[in-house]
Structure formats: C-alpha cells, structure tokens
Amino acid sequence: MAMSGGKDDGSPMMEINTTPLIDVMLVLLIMFIITIPVATHSVDIDLPVSNDTPNDPPPVDPVKNKVVLTQDNKILWNGTEITDGQLLDNLKLSLTLPVEPELQFEPEENAAYDLSVKVLNVIKGSQVTKFGFVGNEKYASF
Image 1: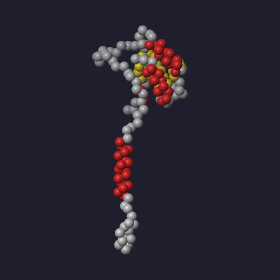
Image 2: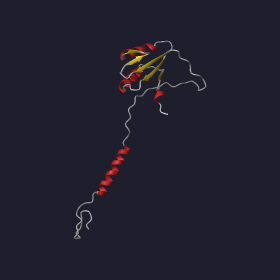
Image 3: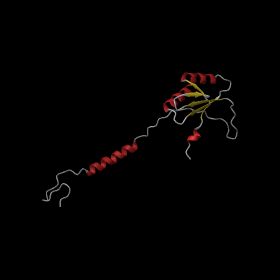
Image 4: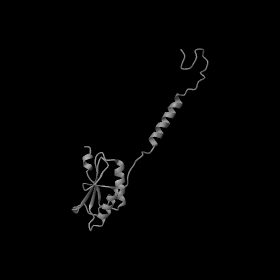
C-alpha cells in the first residue's frame, strides 16, 4: 500500500511535503494577530481634581445645569430642547455667574455616539470646570 503520493514500485516520492510549511504559516499568523494593538476610540476629557481632604464634606452647590442627549438626537438643557450653538452660549453664560454651576451630562441609553462626541467637544472647548457624568449607575451590571 502506498503512502500519500508514493508509488508501489519503491521509487522516491517527488512531491514536496507542504504540511510543515502550512503549520509554520499558521503559527506566524496567530503571532501577528496577537501582537496587533487594540484599536480604542476615546474622547479625552480633563476632569477637575478635588483639593479637599477626604474628611471634609463636599460643598453643596444649589445651582446645577443638566445636559441630556435623547435617542432622537436632541440636546436638552434642563429639559428644554436646544441646538449646538445655544449649548455653547449657555455654557459661556454659566461661566460668567459668580459661582459656576455644576454641569451634569447624561446621555440616554440609545443616544447616538456621534452626538455625544460633538457635545463633549463643545463642553471641553467652553472651559467648564465643574463637570460630571450622571445616571451611569443604571447601566452598571451587577
């Protein structure tokens, strides 16, 4: 009985055995896949650092503004629908107040990522220092 490609007459096998070559190529492919860096997309936001000691209670800020992004690509400022330009005007107006109000950012569950990035870039460009993400606890998985 002949082995793969050989003949029964005892003549030498003339074909190249490609199995080891394929094995080496598969190992190299796996090594290249493992070493590819993971692509991450992020928007860098400089959040303020607290100078308070941990034992001091945080000061109560009675004035807060809330920006909500809805599923149908609307921007809500304290419940009122506004545009990108109005958002920037409101942020600049809030910076002129004697005490800067806290800005709370809350996108709804299915809000567009593109709209979130645009709004965060507007907020970052407006030089707001009191900024926070709210409502994240409802998306936490326990």
